[in-house]
Length: 235
Image (cartoon, rainbow, N blue to C red; front, side, top):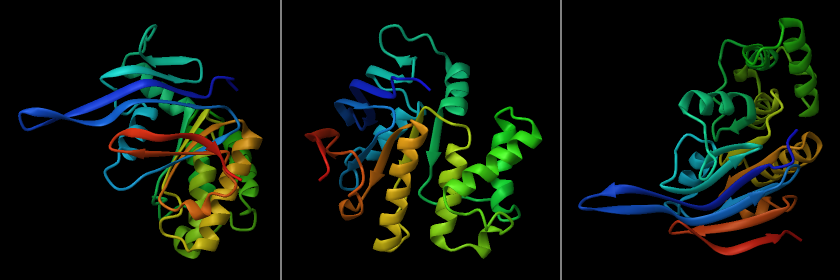
């Protein structure tokens, strides 16, 4: 596991807007160290999604440095073309989507086996890794259940386990509690924070609900594309 984590340095992103350009991310610098969770909060249209897309290397910024683990994606020293960025996403970046997007015909175990096998593991190894990750999110008794047989919180736990099954250097989490009540949302954030510390991933978590974030290591707020206050430890 790399010691670099996720590094965004003076990153700016703009889009065409009529005769001009709209700045979605404005000179943002952010470091997420391995084994730590940083929560990103802001209102709709503040730039959260754009920043997450940059961190995922799905969108390249106009300027600034993006580094995922030891790989320099943009900025001085960047040498990665799109094929290399695609491989970096596959190998080094795990994404927890807002909606789990589980395949309805597959069991919880099979959801992870497919991902682990696609990452190059043998089928026996993929099965073992999938079972291990589901146990780590508290679903060791639910391996044979399909999505419709799981609660919303359980489906989100499968989603998290699937994102971590390849042992990524960076974990990006998009509004994981939006469909959950406060208690289950807090449990999901606590689980993500615990898994981040034990796996050594660098986790950037986008959230709308600061009340669920008691276990994260730091929070940052974004408005109009800019960080509006420095990262602070959560009491």
